[in-house]
Image (cartoon, rainbow, N blue to C red; front, top):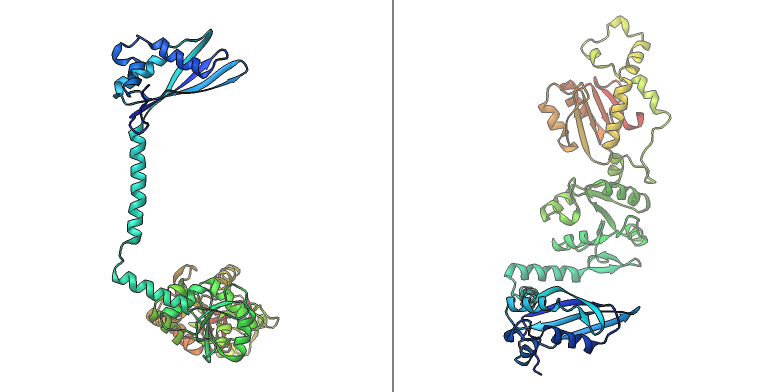
Length: 425
């Protein structure tokens, strides 16, 4: 009997069979040929179709459980779509196999060409991906890949903690301490080979030992995380200078020009701790018991600026003290405290109107210039820095009532503005 090759078949008929009794595989095959004989005419006779190779080998898989037999029937076909459907429908006329009742149901007629087409599409995608991966890159991609490889090769694992570092750590008198491996790579890319990474939030012993022998510049991200790291770093290591990436940026993403600008504007660690309000042990400075006494020495409120006390009122020292104590209302004090605490470590400044609405937030480096351009409408200035005489003079010209910073170099009574520091809240 001729057999159709699975490769040449176009369709496959999938059907199920349920028999109320125990039968064997040959019984099912015999019933298929016997009960469909003469049903469809000579052109669609299953035996003739098998001899001519248009119907393949009929596969029957049956299993008997509990006195009943169930199984699957698979018939490959190279007939056209309509003829294959007729053959499949003919199987469902089988009602008995031997002495047992039977039921045949065609589940699906699979188009083999669809499966092959799906395989071709999937394989074509894989081949195309291989071609793209192996395609010759352009010159810029080659240069970038070579440069990156060189930078990565220059990174060494330094110290017991195997910290990512540039190749010039031992031979350089100055080192740059950054946060992570990506920061070291970015500095290497722009020619800085004396960088070493903390590789975490805790300060490794290797960094502590290096800080005793070399000049250390801490170069950290311009976010809150960078401010937290500098607190711990200055507490356990001998840091000489501190600088930060621009606000909201990380060292790993800034350009060569920005790196040079940041390193040129580095400040001493003592100044950084003063500006950030950090103690020598890394904690933020808390109000001291003697600070509240300064309140009684503060200058008068804004209304008193336009009306200086009369000469006969000068001996009455208690009256100005009382007005100074009551010059800051509880609501204003609470609002100012929240704002100044939010500014800690940001090196930024808030400008407020008389309704305590924030007119703008700006870097402290631009504060003096901004106040010079605003001759009215500014009620209070809060900033993450030290109040000095230059700032006080500009604030007085702009009719500022409250000047609030982290520390002050101006003595009480030297300004018309009411000066307060973080420690007084």
